[in-house]
Amino acid sequence: MEEPLLSQLGETLGREMPLSRAMQIETVSWDGQRLAMKMPLEPNRNHQYSAFAGSLNALCTVVGWGTVFMLLSVKGQAGNIVIRRGTIRYLRPVRSATIVATGLTIDPEQLAYFYELFDSKGKSKLDIGAEIADDQGTYVSFKGSYVVHS
Amino acid sequence: MEEPLLSQLGETLGREMPLSRAMQIETVSWDGQRLAMKMPLEPNRNHQYSAFAGSLNALCTVVGWGTVFMLLSVKGQAGNIVIRRGTIRYLRPVRSATIVATGLTIDPEQLAYFYELFDSKGKSKLDIGAEIADDQGTYVSFKGSYVVHS
Image (cartoon, rainbow over all chains, first blue to last red):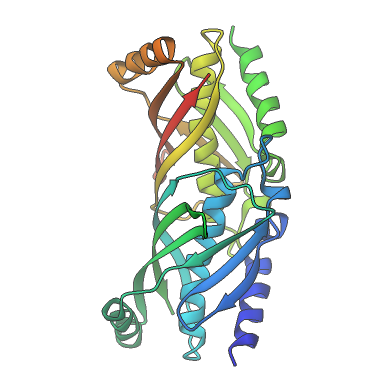
């Protein structure tokens, strides 16, 4: 089971990024490649009771960061993970009481190269997509480029 | 003097985006086109005492939002301002105790078109660049696309 790793990610985030506590960001699930994280609307809202763009981007940024953390953790590895670039589209206002961002499936070749580079060089990089979506469609679409070194 | 408008922006932000209070975001200056805003590192740091990427992006997002707010306010106008897209590059870790993000000069033709569209249609759009930089160079480079409707 990877539950202990997911708990470890939650603890690491709260410790390493204090603002994530003010945002009340929490881990939801990990299926071996796709990480889901959530936050409540209330501390992250604007006065129109939709979510503040800065919070939506931070949640997606953390999903990407946490995905790299989990991809290394499941192999018993760890490193210093940093985001280099991010692109985000805010398609529709987010008004749900609980906001969930989920990582997108990673291209298998890109993932293999990520591990290969980390094993051989002690540093690597990976692009990770994430989105905030429900059965009504996509609200936020995010892509981040992360680097890691051991 | 536009000092009262800058104060109004600060009050509006604190009221409309509660997280900006947790981040301790404050207005710094407005030169008629370029807005500067700041936040302290402490509530926005990660465990390595550099700034959390989510906070850096939120600060730049708010600078862009505030720029549109000021561009309308100086003409006695107001509207509902929303960011549609954002792109950010994190070039180097930000470790200064006070972090300042500053808007970039807006192309005069784009600015004229922004006002023209708002006056004729009651809605408009504007791309705004911002950066976090000092005499050592640029740490963060941001570009956001904003829309506004009256």
